Length: 170
Image (cartoon, rainbow, N blue to C red; front, side, top):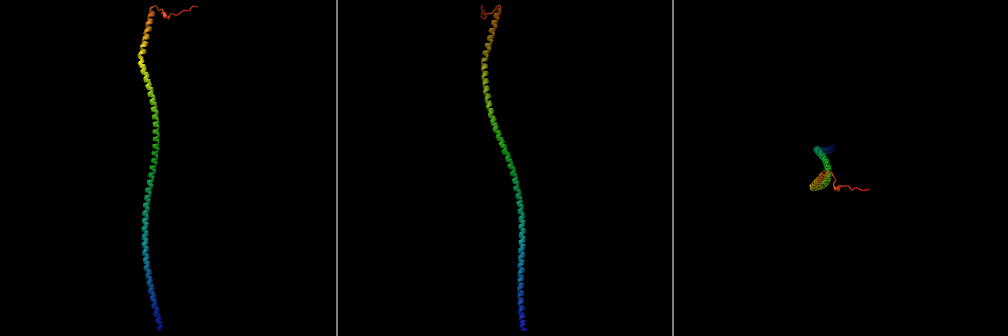
């Protein structure tokens, strides 16, 4: 039985070797599983960090979007105000043009009135200059007529010779 026993021992030693080899391989697989588990945990923590970062970035983006929207609202109001100012400037420019036209018309009318006033002043100065002459002429004529009438009345109301009508014979 010695051969059998030695085969058995050989088989037993091979089995121990296979067992040891399997045990070492199992230990290696366990170690690799532990490494993989730690890598998985590390990856999971990194994913959590990335999620947290994404939340922060999302909040920052939301805040920045809100700021941009607020700026756009302000810009729209500013644009509306600028449009209103532009319209007001256009109206003011039109009013200024109308005022210039009115000023030109007023200037023309003022010049015409000035010419009329100057003409009236010339006429008034002529009348004022000639007025004493006319007054004296009327007074002299009136005095002459009164003296002629008085002398006519004194001479028995006879008509003066120059006033005698010529009688026509038939």
